[in-house]
Length: 395
Image (tube, rainbow, N blue to C red):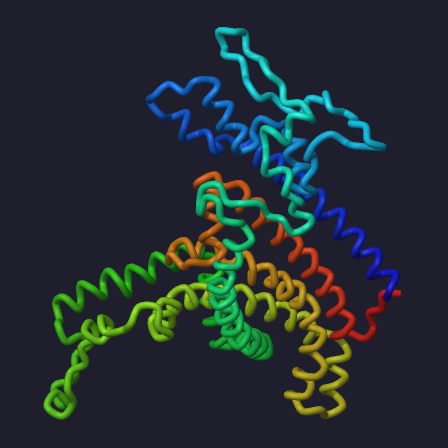
């Protein structure tokens, strides 16, 4: 087991490094960026002004140099060995680009000994590998990225914990009951509903909920001031309930206010997750229930509940663990589409804003941490396989 864990940790390190390299490269070749807004302005920007702005965002450095700077904080100046500077005249980038009238190319290079002067922040940067995530450039300019991520993490964890807990509590019994009662009326109804729920994207459910409970609900309340109305027979005995007045008296930011804002995003995520998980568990249970050892357990006279819960369910959970552990990164990454639709101030909404406004430090940090959590989740899944099925050995 120890040798297996060492080998997996080495593989995980390689995977994280390769993913970070490719995502940094793709971000740098993608259209757009911090200079897009300036280039769309009507006023003429001189090459010197553009060079200072590019140096502010470190865009005057070559992308491999920026990658090393982002990863480990190097280069921060010439290499000093034995009191002597090395590679001081090594070009690190292009500070001043030549105009098309001048033939293009580079007029003034950035050399290694000039890096500390042009980029003072490099002196104090240690790189993301050592916990320095840099600072936000657009979303909250000047604020450390790690502080920004932590400020949004609580809302994402709250949303994901509630929705995934509800999904587990509903998906497992529904999937088991549907598999045990295959081809029953419940099975047909459940399979159809699960197929519809897993086929519809989350943004559709989100917009549908907003339409039903906000737009149409508001119009209905405007037409019926005391909506929902009390049946005529109870009108005199029970005072009508004024929903609008009750909602207006809720203190913003209170626990009740947060609960009400959680209802729709939690419902959307729960519906989508239950539909996918229950169908997956149903298929896994159907495959296990056809195995010989399950028929043998029934032939011995064991109670059906024992056969299903003790013999069938444990083996059926092995493939389900793979799906379950991959939800761990969502506790950090959040639900990008759902949080954006409902304007929930979580990690998913932050990532969407960072991409939309070209805040690469925030976006890259988000992907980097999500990648680490994903490879950890896969390792945890392999370990849980051995816990669920004692026949599995990593030796």
